[in-house]
Image 1 (cartoon, one colour):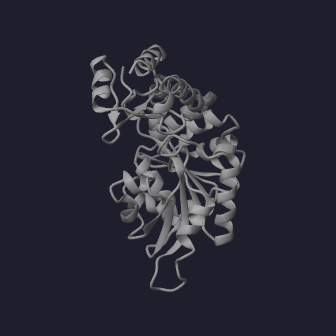
Image 2 (cartoon, rainbow, N blue to C red):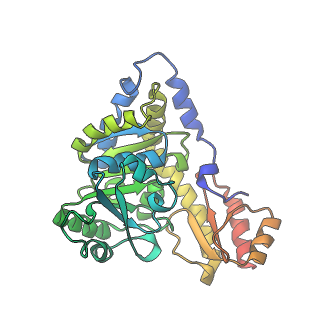
Length: 333
């Protein structure tokens, strides 16, 4: 009864089948038939022209998306608890050759135009200060909360006015889209967002993520950056196969909806313990050390979240019965 992380979940069987089907001689790197299908497949999903690069990790996806947006002397505005700030080991600075993250505040790990302006407005336009070049938002956020279409539009409008590029970290994009229920393009802020890191590993994939450039010109530079960073895999068809399998029949959305359903069961039982609304597949609740031990004694796995809280994450293969049992155990605390 594990609710540690969606990264701990197994690979979906349909992806194994897709990789087995791809196990034949084809052109190396991204010159294979499957990689050649990615632009059109994503274009059909989002209803707009796309240029798509596969990579093996979310960290690489984020950094390779941001690289063409921000020069080494520039800055990227993000939430102070964003994954690129808190959980990527300084990779943005490494991949962007020293570019700085400019940290904004916001409720539930989401940023707003006002929060962004509070960071960038005091920056003088001179060589002594790091100038902003891009904004990065996370859908769903680090606390499992989702940007609505109007929120994305407002941030996109600010980015346009200030001449900034806009990136979306979509490690749990599927969970956000499943919650919002308005289609992939709406959840991705198509028309406002320049690049999306479309996460699959947390949603049933093995080692394939996609960088979706809605501004295809950015992809031209990113291809060189991917090679230089060591992420142009010689047998990339196996990554392309995973991405296409996830898109086929909206498996990505089906998996995410199953994970969200389990999280809703936990959130419904948590009551006033909840620290953040349950909108995707993460649940954060107030929980003492003794209460956490009591839950672990009953066989539930999860992570402590500081001294007085816990985080529960449901995955695509969540056992709904186990989720109900955990919900009952939380209600009994």
